[in-house]
Image (cartoon, rainbow, N blue to C red):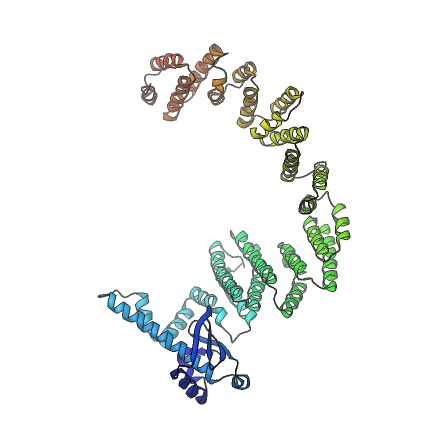
Length: 559
């Protein structure tokens, strides 16, 4: 079925029409309602009737009666079509009446035009406009592709993406940023249709949409300027939808079809060069339910291991997929041996730890993390392992371990929350640890953050004499302002002399409003720490030395 609801008389036999009309007039139609979008259900003479209309075109229908089983049409289905058409007409008339009652003089809007134009005239206009405007034609096809039943479902989506890519490609076969945006817009429409198919449990249609995106977008990823990341996300989204489909337990025929599809596609070079091959393997892990399928998958993964090694690529992602495949197949011992022999791979190590956590094997988690720290690991992996060990030590109340890993995290992050944890858990050697920590930061290249960390350690530990010496050494006004509260009591004269020197030097070497504001802020800081007399003295000195600097005079006038 594929015809307009308004013209159903041209597509249904006379007998079914007459009998259906009689049923309608006799009130034989019960419980007509829209169960899902575009899918209507009703009961006629005890028979359940389904009718799919989107939005005004009849796409299909069924009835439980014998006549429908024999002829593909019956009076019950015809009656429901007539009832739905009457319902739509009544709704339209009601809306039109409401508009006329609430509106007097109106503007010529798109809505008014659409309400008054005939369907035939509108269709003719759309066809003509689509011929003249390629962008409109693509948008039209993308929006209504799912309603087309004359073309094989997958083929229509492949054709749509082919025509879109052809339209946005430049002569050198690259795709500009603007062209990529047009392509992404079409893909968003397809993703929405895939979402609708998922809600309606039309899993075959969903699979076809996803496969078309994977096959047609992957080859153009490297040609799309400025939007490669977004297009790759569209491909990943298609695979995500296929995983969601599998979670819903589709029919065995569809599962077999998807398995066959993966076997045909995964080994193509275009997927490997774009990093999409791993997505196929992850999908195959979920699909491989039979022993033969599981063996085929493991053989394919082993072949790819060799290819990855030849190409100098990391095999860790493949190892993780193989581990998942072995565990899903119930081959736990093989998975364990594979995992143990590849713990130097950071991803495999983290996977092993996650598995141990899931099984509540805390001693193994700790042992794996300690083992991992002996390897040359990326900084982010090392950080995760240290955080894990710190958390385990805190859970067990192991002070020595808390101290060790908190100090390690502090050295990497300069986060004083770790410093405080290390201090609370420290033993008698804390002072030596402080000295070692200071020595570590002092040998690093100069940076404001490193400078402030050293000063704060000295302040936190009450090493005020060394803090004063350090402030005089680095000659930083920022540092002086931050740590002067620690120095004003025991080193007042040296602190005030350093303030005088730094402010004077700053004024000598800098001009402008920002400089004047900076001076005012520093003088305010002196007031805050109880050195208001020095602030007043400096104000007078600066007024006498720099009367011509108007912005400075304005800022000093605030005192």
